[in-house]
Image (tube, rainbow, N blue to C red; front, side, top):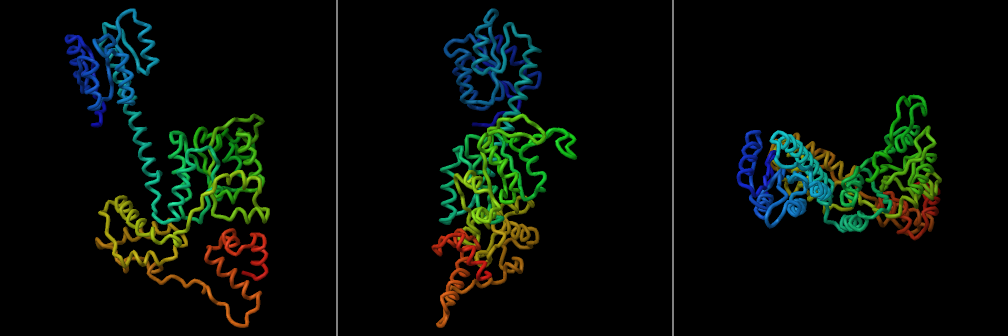
Length: 452
C-alpha cells in the first residue's frame, strides 16, 4: 500500500453537489482531498492510502456503517467521521461503537467539519508514528538482530520461540557481553506483551540500600532523601516485561521481598502499608553461577527455582567462532552507517584473525573493536594490519589436555582432570561438574583442596 500523506482526506458522498462543495472547501483549507461516489469506489481509494475518511451513512449498495467496518480492517489508523441525517442518533451511536472517530449531522457546518478533520489527522499522524516506532523496536530487538548460525545459537533461537509467548519467568545465564539483554528484549517483543513497557533494572549498578526502592518504589519521607513519592520498576512495567539484570548481585534481604512479589503478584512501596497488584512478566539475567551461590548460601534457593522456571544459557563467543564472520559483517555495516561512511569489506585473513581471538568480552568486545576499526580505517577493505594489536596476537595457548605422565598418583591425575575441564567449561562449575560426573558441592571442595 502506498503510504498516506499526512493530510490526505477521503470524502465519500453519493450526492454530487455536496461531494464537490465539501471537497472544494477542504482543499482550500490545505487538505489533499480525494472523493468517492459510493462505498465500493471508496475501498479502492482506501487501498491507495488515506489519513482521514469522511463518509455519508445513507448510500446505495455499501452503506457508511459497512464501509466503516471494512475501513477498520484495511486502514486501521485512519479515523472515520460519519455524516448522518437529522434524527439518526441511533445510527450515530452505532457508528461510534463500531469505531468511528466522530459523527456530524447534515447539513454539515464546514468549519465544524474542518476542525474535526484536523483533530482526526493529528490522531492518524500520532498513531502512524507509534506504529513506526514499534516496527523499529521489533526490527532492532526481534530475532533478526540476534545473529548466529552455530548449533549453540540455534538452540537459543528455538528456546526463545518456545517460551516467548508464555507467562513463565525466565532466567538468562551468560558471561558479560554475550547479549543477555538483547535476548530479553527479543522475548518481550515476540510476546503478547510487545505493545506494553519493557523495563530493565541492573542490580549490579545500584547501591544495596536502593535496590528495593528501585524495584518497588517508595512514598514521600520513607527514608532520608525520599523527598517525593516514586513508583518502582514493577509499576513502570505493569502489563509488560521487567528485566532484572545481574540478579546475582541482589542483596539477600531484597531477594526475599522479590520472591514474595513474584508469588503474590503484589508489591508494597517502601514506607507504605498498601499492597499494589502488578501484572508483570519477569526475566532475570546473570553472569554468575547462581547454583554455586545457592550452595554457598549467597543466593536464596527458593528464589533460584522460582526465577529459573525456564533457563536460557548463552554461549561465549569463543565457543561459536563460525558466527564471527556473520557478526563482523553485520557490525561493520551498522557502524559504518552510524558514522556516515560506506560499509567496508573485510579480508579472509582479517576474519580468520578475529575467529582465532579468545574474546573475553564476547560479542560486546567484538563490536567495540570493529567500531575502533571503522573510525580509524583509511581503506575500503579492512585487512589484518588494521586490527588492534591484541587481536592480531595469537590466541593464548590453552592448558594441554594430556598432561598425565607416568608416575603421577591418583590425586595428581584428578587435579589435572579438574583443571583442564574447568578451563574447557570457561570456569562454569555446573558444566564442569556434569562433565566430571560429580556434584557441584564435591567440585567446589576439590577446587579448594587443590587450590585451583
